Image 1 (tube, chains in turn purple, yellow):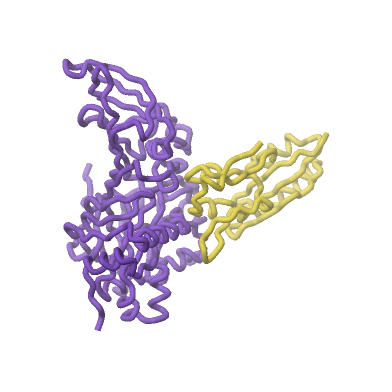
Image 2: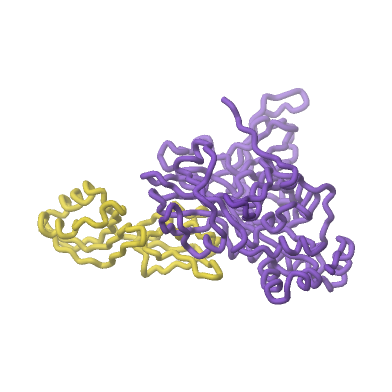
Length: 398
Length: 133
C-alpha cells in the first residue's frame, strides 16, 4: 500500500519542522537503497534545480514619475533598448536585447558582450544603471527627454517575468558540417568535434514531473535566488514522452514554464548576464521547483536517474537551421555526463552549458528553505497541459 | 635575436603534416618545443620558441598551411567569482587545461596545460576567463 499525502498535510509537517525533504539526487539514492514504496512513504518533498541560459527572460520595471511628468515612449538602460509600448514609466527589458550600436555578427562571430540580461544582472547587483528615455510630449505628460541614473532600490517595481524558462529537456547539439558554427548551444566544432547539452538531467525540474502532476499555475519556486511563482505554461509548451524506434520510453521533452517573481529579492549569483559567441546576449537563470510526494507515482517520476533520461542528438549544422525533422539518435544523461557519446559511430566529447554544481546548490538551498519552515508548498490553481493533451508546434509559413 | 614564444594550432586535417621539419629544413629556423599536444579529435597545439633569419617567412609558411599562429605573451586566468562551472569551455579547450571533474561535474582549470590559445575567453558564456598581460 503506498501512502497518499495532501498539500495541506505536507505543509503542516513543514511548519512543524518535521517534513522530510530530499534533493532529487538524494531521492534516487534512497529509492535504490529502500525501494520506491518505502521512499515515497518517508519523503514529503523532493527539490530540483537548474541554472542555465534562458533567453526568454526579462523584467518589467516602473521607474516612477519625473517632474514634469513624462510618458517615456522609448527607453534605454545602459544603452540597451527596453520595450516601452505600455503605460507611462513602465518598461520591459528583455534578456536578448543588445545596444543599437552593437556590431552584432557583422564582425563574425560577434561577441555580444552586453545586453538586456547584463542590465538585469547589474540591477540585481545594486549597480547604478543609466536610464535614457524619449517621448513626444502630451498635455498630461509634457516632458520629452530624460537622462538619469537609477538603481533597483530607487524604482517602484521590478519583477522578473520570463515567458519561456525551465525547458523540460533539450537537444544535445552537434555539428556535422566542415566548419565551426556559433549557436545558442555554444561553439560547435566541425565534423562532430563536440556535443553540447543543456539540462541538469536528474536534477532538472520538469524532467522530474513529466506528466505535470504537481507543477502548475501558482506553484511557488526558487527563482533567481528569491521566491517566484509559475505564472502559466511557457511559450512553446509542447510536452511529450520521447520514445525510440522500438517504442521504449526515454523520458519527457517539450514542456516549458512562464515564471514570475520580485527582482528586488533576487541575487546576481542566480541571474547572470550571458553571451554566446556568434549568437547573442542572454540571461542565465536559476530555478528550483519543489515536488510534493503526494503518492508513489510522483515519487517514481521524481526518482528517475540520469540513466533513464535521454536527450535527442540534433545536428545544428544541417537539419536544425532548416527545420528538418529527425535526429541522430538519443543519448542518456548518464552518457552525456560521462564526457563522451557515440554519434554516427564516432566518439564525440560532450560538454554541458547548464551548470550541474549550481543546479545541485539550488536543490540544496530549496531543501534548506523548506526544512526551516520558511517556504511552504502551494497547490496549483490550475495544472498545466500535459503530454496527454497532445500539444505540438505549429509551423510558420512564409 | 632572442627566441620568441608562439602558439600554433592545427586542425585535424593538418596535424599529421611534418611542418616542424619544414621549418627547420626550408627556413633554417631553430626550434624548441615547449609544449605539444594532440587531442582525441586530432587537433594539435604547439608552443614553440623560434629563432632564425627567416622567422617571418617561416610564420608565413605556417599560416599558408592553415596553422593558426599567435604570440605567447600573455596568461589566461579564471575569475572564480564569475565562473558558474557550467562546462561550456571544456569541449572547446584544445589541451584539456579546462576539464570537468567527475562525478561532481565541477569545472577545473590547470594553468600548466594552458597554451593561451584564448578560445575559452570568447566561448565562456559569462566571460569568466580573462587574459592577463
